[in-house]
Length: 379
Image (cartoon, rainbow, N blue to C red; front, side, top):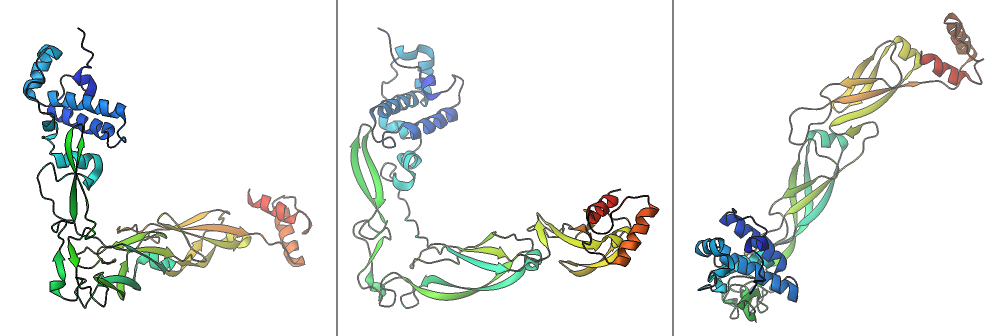
């Protein structure tokens, strides 16, 4: 009679020369996908899960795999196989952690798991700094409100040490185990203990100051070193400066979002600084020296004769430091040539003589002058 079973290697999506670690990895991936508890007990997923579990039970056993490779399904492959041992290589706790995170486990593997400490929430603050402060860094004193361990009960939440008792329901673990029957046998799931809320202890006589929470609200000040090169919107994380949940909880973190005030004359692009300066067409033609603002203060910049509109002057190493870097980028100055819209009679006469000397056709100083003058500067 024909056997309708699929080849075990095909079931796991493997070739016959695969390693034992390949088999384990393939099974983990497929089990995570088809476990009935993940798929709300769908019949198709249940059958698929049985199939891949069967394939794993055989191929993960060196003797059974060798027998299968030699005889296929004609051998007595399932003699002595206990399907509860399908998961033994992983440990029951590990395999159900694989499916559901830390919700499952413990009950199968027989391993006691330490109760995880509660963690307080993070605090998000915003601080504003000036443009030049973002370039060179700055120290900022920041005030904020935070949950801290109650100083009256030292975070225990109890009026006295005798008031804190081990939870009688979970035995101090903060977890309780619930057994249920499935097609794989009896499964044990672990959930947070409702009696103690996962703390592992209960308080009989709550602290009057914190009402048994173990923490109170307080105002704190902290000086923060904002590094050079920080950008608008960057966040700094200060570990352990956030909220407490009292007791032996872990404090959350303090997150500080940095906002950089814009500068009226300077702009940041990457780690370069950009600015614009305007000069007259006479200064552009003959050259000049002008004072420009930089991150390091005002600086004289030489404009060479014949400078064209849109030209750039680069001040090396006058830009921003890369965040956590040591070499500054550049300050790039864009030159704009200002064309006057209104000229005196004398200025018009001078420009006409200038144009005539260059055999240029110009207007009379009113209509068309601006456009004609712009054209002459493009030559």
